[in-house]
Image (tube, rainbow, N blue to C red; front, top):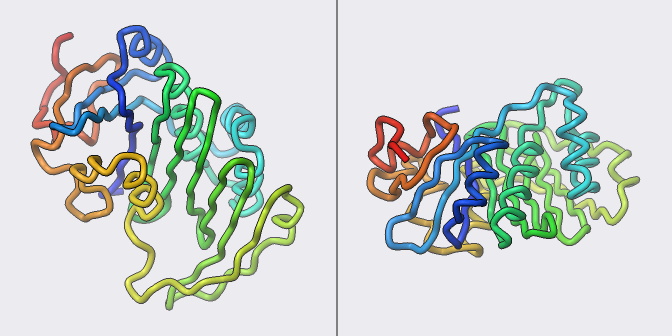
Length: 236
């Protein structure tokens, strides 16, 4: 995907102990958003294989209704990469002992965002196929959507069996279609307005100079390197 974005946005610079822990699990590249008092972590989160039970189990412990909804709506060959980022974001929040915003999104399949605290997930926004999903405080809302090129989806009956679920009315998208990184931009603005410097939600995100690479261990490169003007891994 040419317009993929991913990472964990934090409002406090990670200390050495937290970074060492993240290095052991994922590897990382840590960027500072210029003059914003914000930091962005890119992590070496591996893309899961379809049906990866370990990833599903770890994510379900954090947000069971949301994970159940994905499994009902998704296909058998679904990789559920967003679940790996859900778990990673929760790990970062626990290590930093503060609230973080994790995200992974592209122009086609993914539009996932999570706000996590040391206690776990607080808010999740996601899109899977023709369904928008929001999980907050254990309550789950699912909205079927369709564009002018699509037929309205028929929600699976199994969705009604998920506790604390609300199935919203089917909605037709605007003529412009689904917005690029729509869930991510909506939550990011509330989490930290200064993150707008990243340009997420535009077709020209990550302008050069918007980030400064300040530390990296175990992750050789990142899609954010261009924004930091980096072409090679810095020495520590």
